Image (cartoon, rainbow, N blue to C red; front, side):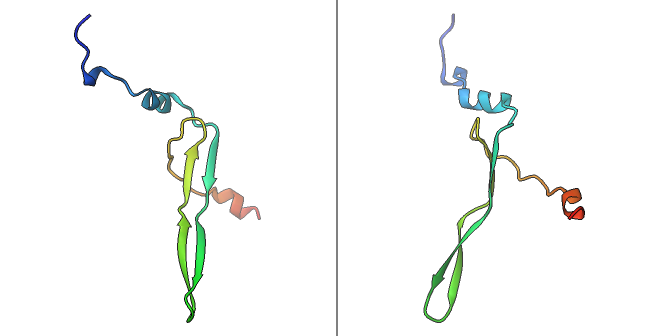
Length: 73
């Protein structure tokens, strides 16, 4: 076997993420925090919207809303 270089090392987290089917996911909606500044309130985003896989911790693209769900209401 030849000499091992840094380029031969595989990041197992990346391998796991590539093989993961992303079946267990969590959607985190944006959360806002309001601060009273005396002459009104300032609204800040405290947590940004995200969609992650619980199994491999990769951040996924946020899916588009299902139009049929909104039409049947």
